[in-house]
Amino acid sequence: FLLLIFVYHRKIAGFPFREIAGSFVKILLASLGMAVLCLLSFQFLEHYLPVKSTVSLGIQVFGSILLSTLAYVILCLILRVPEMQQAFRWAFGKKVTGR
Image (cartoon, rainbow, N blue to C red):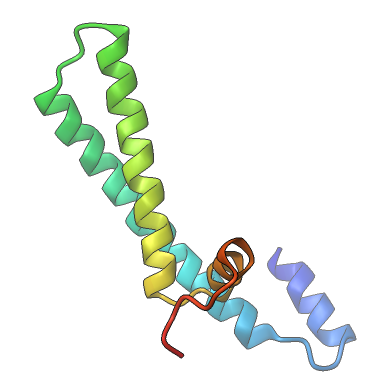
């Protein structure tokens, strides 16, 4: 991927390398936050809802997935990831941030 960006940057004038790198770093940070919250929420649910059946395991798994997905979206909005803002504008037809 990095080699492709390097080659593309050399061949195309005006390649938005800074914007792409900035989005990459923001998305990486949001993903790391999501992973940490997913692990913590799964452990929390595992502690308070021990695995006694398939249903309780399903609640643990899907509960942690739901919380971590919500956290990812919120983190992307806090970090002002342009792609997430564009997705919200597309989905809801309005600007998400105060800019």
